[in-house]
Length: 314
Image (tube, rainbow, N blue to C red; front, side, top):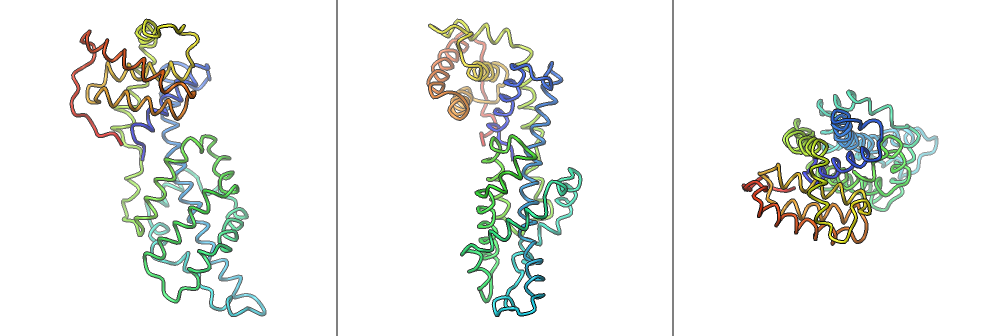
């Protein structure tokens, strides 16, 4: 689920917290522990989104019981079907042992308030998309997937759902695009295979061999990296450079010097994109200019390792 760009961002966030002397990031071991926790939280956030999504869909059964229990049910009540909960697509998630085990292992069920789940379902039940789905005489597999996608789109734009996520994971907005992408991919693949969750679990190659090593290199070689950056700032004093910009420059240099499998131009472009997303309006051009000069300089000095094809950037 985590691409190398996602990992770079998490490393950047840890280094920023360390720069601000936040206690969990003390020392290399503390920084690595904090980084691993952030990686785990991204996966847990995906699992929590999946569980909340399932709980809202499954509430259709309660709706069916309520309608059947009316003293004077309407014709619509009598014709109502709980197919949002009972279709094969959703059931493939509900019956998935690995997913159930993961939800239990992290204790995610306790974070979902039943009244809020009901509120979300009631809100979705009023949409035209859901009404049209309920009124279908026969629904195909594609119809079930489409309404489940509509449900998730409804949730991620709903303040109740957003608050639910932010209450448990304050960095929800940082991981939102990552998690939403993973959720849509999951829903589009319904019904899922038994081992589908492996696709979304943190992969050691990306998390440890790239992300953790990058973090350790930047922390260990902080002064050396600063010594490379400073002469290339031209009319800028290092102390006047935005904190995030300096962190981004140090991370990029560490990739130039220590990660031979990643093409240098890929590194440069990736950190320019990170600067666009997280730093100031002028950071993109500043980062691009400094890194371009540094790359030429380090290459001429023979300090940039020969680049192979490397792994494809995701």
